[in-house]
Length: 58
Length: 357
Image (cartoon, each protein chain N blue to C red):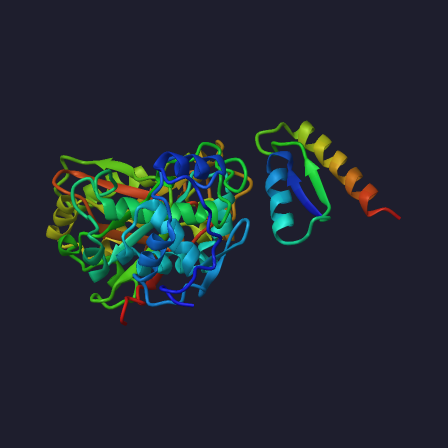
């Protein structure tokens, strides 16, 4: 699983394509990460972890 | 395959006009926004004749999209940039240097920081190409400097996919990303040329790539003593908004002394090592100020730097040798500091592969 912010999602897709890894799973976090207040970072982290757990699945 | 044989690259048939070629390349995003020299097979073969290397020889793969940099592909971009064939051995050596893992070209290409590879040419190659090291060294005006730097950019653009918002994620970019290549004014360096200080023989041709911001001016019309002048230079280097220092292990500074500044410092008895030591000691920021913002909290420092009081002034590079000192420019009391991006190390390569070598 590759983690990226939304601003870098296009780059991640292009690179996955170039490297022949079209189906590479991406976990995308809303940009930005820097300059955010702690409560919003915590909310993003919680959402990200939930997404990660769901994708890894049983 | 040879420079006179068939080319491996696709040949595109277009209307025989500058405008048609320009439009074709621009519409496909193959240029940096400036007009290009059409890379006809004849021009590409002429460019390939400038280097003792097979056209299908692979220099490496260029991140972040990992296009293969064969000598032929590099030659095509060199033609587009307006280079003369004599530039090819330097251009290939520069790409080899940038593909050294120490340079971290992936980071340099894809970062949000406005970093561009500065290409520094030392030794006989500079004169062979007709490069400029004197007045207005960073440009504009000299074709060899301008086209060599532009060829590097076009290789990063077309082979590496370093296009704004895609493979190049720079928030604002930099004019240095169009072209960024200089030679050293070696005869004006009181301590010998840059490449000799990096372990090469002074008579060798060497290319050094440095992942830097654009040059930051240092204006000092007054100082006669070396410590004063170096303090002014250090103050230009150690600013709160700089990347340098946050990832300490890979932070470096390039100091491009104007010839008059270099002469003043040398006249005060300072060696190159003295200059480096003085700048290392002076180019510092108090940790209390660093806590204001910047990259505080996501920095990467040795433990001792995090256990000092707020008044302690912290170094911005690991040691004196991480401050590269060279001389370039013309008359006047100006020098330049080129901060690096803090996640790349300068890399040098000897320039070989001249035709007939």
